[in-house]
Image (cartoon, rainbow, N blue to C red):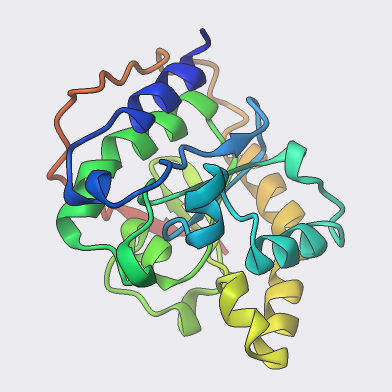
Length: 216
């Protein structure tokens, strides 16, 4: 079993928060095992909860469509969420739910080592850039732990607004530029972190890591 599969297995057996009692399936994430870009949403919806896969509803179809303008395919990137189980009635994740899931997301980031983390929606963005507004930050790159974070509007919001859809498409067109900026920034770094292990009973991190700097 690969390291990413071990993380997924830990997610599917997780009982750290109340969402474990209401989910149909946990949704660890899916995609390339060496992605340049990692997309991180807020949490699974109803379709994702039923099938255990991220972004497979209408918002996911729009994301797939917009990736094509780069061009990228779903298999070229990695897609996951801040919380791995669906909050009831699609409510916002509670702080304790976000904290419970953080070790899994952090392990995925450390293992996959994406050049760019593209957050989808304000909740995902605020996990990396706390205290910011997506209306200010979308389409702008910020460095977090030597990784470029590139906030995007959530595709679900873009489905409700033609203006936001165009904004999202325009921002996605700049993702290759963000990847190049990341490669240039890290070109002198020759060492890699060891692959992380996440046990099913690992404790959630209470620590936020807001350290960041504007890249462009």
